[in-house]
Length: 126
Image (tube, rainbow, N blue to C red; front, side, top):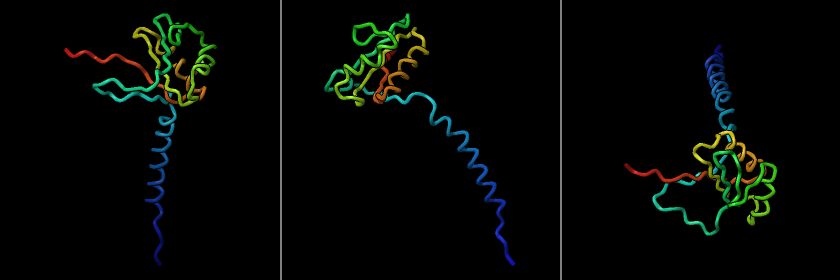
């Protein structure tokens, strides 16, 4: 009489369970952002995106206007003509707090906007 040996099956299933338990939290952590690909030429955009700027003191600006954290999302909603598909670029000063930048991006993301990008200067060669 032959029997199926289930020990290798249990071993494989336990390994897969551990792999999924370790990788699942990594897949959901962080703020999903839409970063532009590195290119030699600037991206051609048909419409000017909404620019959110964080200065070194942690003040938040939309365009040239200073806004508070509470007024950030309503102000973006009034400027977003394409709704939640509006492209929003976040510019953070090099010395600005990383926490402030992530708080701003999180607030924009939680409001429903998914096309968020970070703006950086192209590195100079040499």
